[in-house]
Image (tube, rainbow, N blue to C red; front, side, top):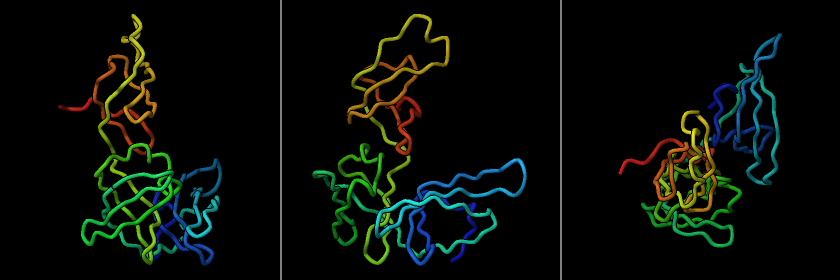
Length: 188
């Protein structure tokens, strides 16, 4: 199925130069003169090499037919992550590189989306947000609450995020898994 280059999103699998590629990012750029272009960063599924390709926004790219399946996270072991398909109990093991930075947000039993092509995992997408507890946060500086400044905090998984000044240690917050950004205070 052909799709327009400007509709490519992170995690999509495309066929380009007779290889399968996973889209890492797509940045639409509009130069001062001329037509807009899609600056697409892709990773070769077989070799793992990355490439930066510039498409015209009208260019059509062949999207590979992949299956999207729900898998449950079981455990991690030395950079390898084990997931289980809840329908047939089949397990797959993937390297941290396939998941990327969001791997720090994996929690026992978490359901993730896995894109499979010919029984091989191509990409793993975590839920958009997770709820975590802050274990360490800087104290509020007098007058800081009046401005829209953020302060650093450490989550229970060791990840660092920037939070509003009123958030203290022990508070549960919602964090966006894609970029480790603060969303809101968790509702209990």
